[in-house]
Structure formats: C-alpha cells, structure tokens
Length: 278
Length: 205
Image 1 (cartoon, rainbow over the protein chains, first blue to last red):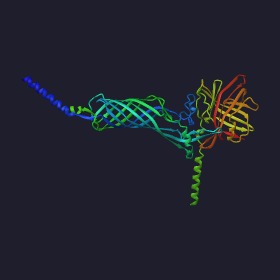
Image 2 (tube, rainbow over the protein chains, first blue to last red):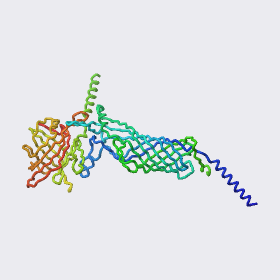
Image 3 (tube, rainbow over the protein chains, first blue to last red):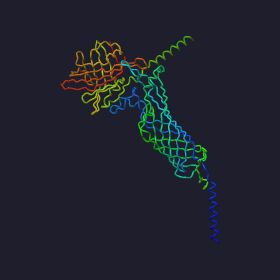
Image 4 (spheres, chains in turn purple, blue):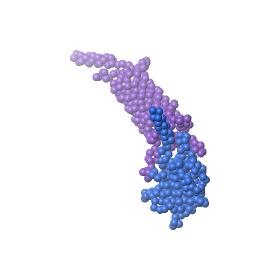
C-alpha cells in the first residue's frame, strides 16, 4: 500500500510537471523581416589611369636620396557600406535561411599629395594638354542578393543566443556617379572628355563569408543581431570602381540587423527554457 | 576715399592675375620612373619628367634631383643640347658630376616654342659641324673623338596646362662611341631623355 502511494505521488508530480511545461510552450512565426546595415573592407589595388601624370618618382633603391619616393595616393582597401531588406525563414529550431535585396555603396577617390594632379587629355600631334585636377570622387551603387544560413548551436531561445553564419552576396553594379574637382573652374568644359576615358566598373562581383553572431531578444518579439564576418573572400581581380581592383585576400565585415516577426500560419513551436528553469 | 577703392581694386586684380599665372611646380620636378628592363635607368617617357639616363660601359650617367638636368642654347645657327647629372658606379657606389654637350647645326630658334621643330629629327653626330663634349668633376671639358653616334629627338610637343602654353616636352634617345686619350673605345648606350623646356631652360642670343 505504501509502495502504491509512492507511485501515485510520482505520477502526480510528473503530470504536474508536464502541465507546467505545456503552459510555457508558445508559437512564433517562421517568417520575419530583417533590416540590415553593415560594412566590409575590400582589399585590392589602385588602378591609376595612365592619363595621370606621375607627380613623384617611384621608389628607387640605389639613389633614393636624390628623388622623391611615393606615388599618387596609393591605397589597398576600400570600404563597402550596405543596407539590406532580408526576409528570414526558420527551417528548424536551429536553422534559418535568409535572402533579400542589398544596396551597396562604395566611395572611391583620386587625390594628389599636392593641391592637384595633372590629367593628360587625348592629344594632337603637335601639342599635349594637361588639366589640373584637385580630385576625382566616384560613388558606386550596386544591388545585390545576399544568401545566408544561420546555425544555432543551442536549441533554447535565450535572450542572448549565439550562432554561426555562412553567407554569400551576389552584386550587380547599377550606376556610378563621378565628380571632378578642377583647379581651374574654366576647365569644366573638358569634363565629358575626361569622363569618357574612365574605365567602367565590372558589372558583377561577389563575396563569400562565414562568421559568428549574437542575437539580442526573443524570436516572438522584434530582436536584433550583431555579426562579425571573418574570413570573407571577395571575387578576385574585379574592378569595383573605375580605379580599384580587388584581391582575393581574407577580409573582414560587420553587420547588424533588426528582425520583425511576420504573422503567418506557419509557426514554430518554442519552449522557453529560460523562463522554465530560471 | 576713391583712391583707396581704386588701390584696393588694383591690388585685387594683381592678386587674381598672379594666381592665374601660377606655374605648376610639378612640371619642374624630376620624376624618375624606372625602366622595366633596367631599374637603374629611367624609362623612356614623353611626359616631361625631366629625367635622363644612359650607360657608359658598365656605369650609369643619370639625372640628379639637385642639378638642372637639361639646358638648351641656340647660338649662331647651332644648338647646344646639354645633359647635366651624375656618373654613378653601382659597384663602388661612387658618384661624380658629369655633363654632356651635344652641338649640331639647326634652323633658327629664338624662343622655347621653336624647338618643336626638333620633332622626329635624327642627328648623325659624325656629320660636319656636329660635336660632343664631356666634362667631369675633376677634368676640363674634353672634345670626344667619336667613332659613331646618333641623337634622335623622337618627340617635341607643345605642352599646355589648362589650355595655356607652358613648355615644350622634348623626348628622345641617343648613343655614341668614342675613343679616350689612350685610344680605348668607350660605349655610351641606352641613352634616353624626357624634358619640359621653357624659357628657364632655353637660351638664345
């Protein structure tokens, strides 16, 4: 009899526990919309237009004291800023898929270490014409499609939840805006002639990355993420701007996203273990 | 009061005028772009980089940042084309100043813009009235006993800066052989030059 009482008590306890767990079970929409802002460095080389007259000697190892060393503002990286709208779909508790549209902006510029540099216009036989230019600025806009897979090592949806991300972005250069700042404003008349000589950026470029991220908030409410993308690999030898070509060196990126759940009939059942056990 | 206003206007005009005629100092610099095949020599260019170079046997005769590399003098129907720089021994790292003078007859040149006429002109240095002289730090000017020699002005173009004539870009190549006092032949080869010449570097009288 005593044994029977103990068994009944255990069943009662188990039943109570089960009903408590069922109370904590809730559903979240599988679909959410993300609004993202991020940046990444793009390593590469300045491609100096041949029309620019050198204003300094190249490094000259034997007789360096006699000559200037250096070059027009050489640099080896550009920053790509992007903004995305990307729906995310929870496949399972631990796996999400994301895609959408990404607008990328890359600024590039040519400057001299002095007040201006000299740009050689297409010339005639008996003369050559140099135009003094203070700087050239180019803004490139591209539309891209990001594809991302996120894997959460832990199933429970804590307020802070870490994850891994595997991603790629396929970008299409849509338009460029180039401004030329002339030393002598009267030389504006040559603007079109100079613009015609610029190489056009490549239409397509892509990059691939893995990274780690941290989610702030719970999936049944708006939540945010911060991601560090490393390593990133960008497609090699792509002319990103008129004056810059990429290298496929390891690069780094950073992004932050705000997700807002979208109510749909597709739900994911979530047990909030945090509330359960805290 | 009117006088003050007038003076202010005149001062302003002078300032504006002086700004607009500001000559680009970049054009007066020596810019050394190494040759792809021999980085001790400047590459052949036609941009007015104020550089020259040549090999004298196995030494180098090169432009120097501290010496005006070229001067041109027109006198009595002859051009004196002067290359001034340093002779460098790359093994012993010794430098000594050296100057080459090319003399050849040419049509009247009274202004720097007249040297455009040198475009695509090839001078055989063994011709009558041509001569080459050399001076070094420790010796007087010596007339070279040429075996053969040539100087070719490949390109002579008027250079405009912002549509205003600024100088003439003069580029070309030279090579020659000569005998020293002891009858030893010396070879000067791979000579190339690229200068921006204006009235600071061209003289005529």
